[in-house]
Image 1 (cartoon, protein in one colour):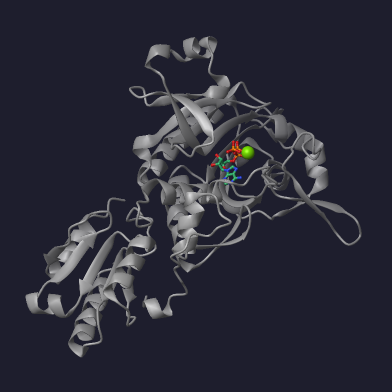
Image 2 (cartoon, protein in one colour):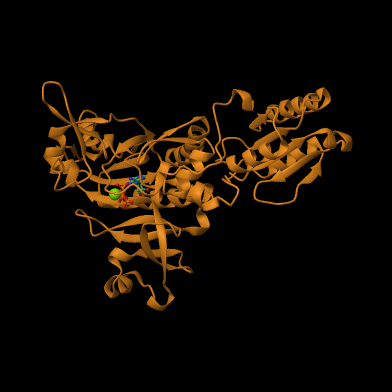
Length: 420
Ligand code: ATP
Ligand code: MG
């Protein structure tokens, strides 16, 4: 992609109306546009980051038997009345709307009820189960505060997976599989070392749940971490009784701020029973279906990655998440420099490396500032100076020193650095 064809404009000044660092950086670097507090639009590079995060999540969900769907945003009030969740005193973050004839509709904050209802047309017998539908979809929540940028949106992208199982044992086994898949996802997103499976409250329907918490000083949650066991306890359920039950030693736990990047819940048959979804077993008996729900905050993770890896010069993306792996900077308008830069661009592209090629006629300092702000993992410079050496200048984002390398070596360095 040539920079002159890429719909992006960076800015140097920090937006005055945006308190959070992740949104400030993403706005300055041209990844998102702020519509309202807690509501962001994704520009081409922002969309690419969302797609890259989603790709990792999709691969891991598909590998455990997930089937991707896309549910509607407008929802039938009656289904939520059946479960008792239409009431604003039960769910305080609802956005609701009306048809012109006055019929009330919900604007989806979650999808247990509509999905469970839809499955009534597809599930009758034990042979139809288990099923694991998931989606990556926009959720709407009237959050009280929206000061954390993409990390707490009023409109945000969530991956939500739902499991429908024939027995508690079948449910438990899948719950564990999801937990393992989640750890793989956070690893692949570069957050493995600071993300902890966390014991948390279960809400109304089960005794407990698990969250996945990433340590961050901007986190809204407080957790107690056991570094050796790679496990944490949310402050909400932190008490002596819980610690004994989990076999944790209080003296080894360290209090930390964290961001909830995902969670997994056992729901029992609360929703399936309420919506009238049952199955008939081998003996011909009608049985309840055991459900689980499993969320990951896709846009929250984008905000977290932006904020976590940033330095004083701007964004620093992991290679598998960056919109482009390479920022190719061509300095000057000398035809031989342009020719060489075109060659480099073509060669990298042929080898499957994604490149943004800055073909503008601007000062080197301005171009480098843009490259740092936008945060691609590698910067390559082609200039009069590099032409003389027969090599190119390669700098890894976040490192100070550039190295002089041949085009062939450079391709190998970039391809070998791909971890996931
Ligand atoms: P929180 O406690 O942060 O409000 P939650 O318990 O309401 O989260 P869920 O309803 O289970 O979260 O949603 C699943 C995942 O979606 C969460 O683990 C989180 O990563 C993400 N998420 C929840 N609310 C938001 C939001 N307002 N903006 C962005 N991501 C969110
Ligand atoms: Mg919430």
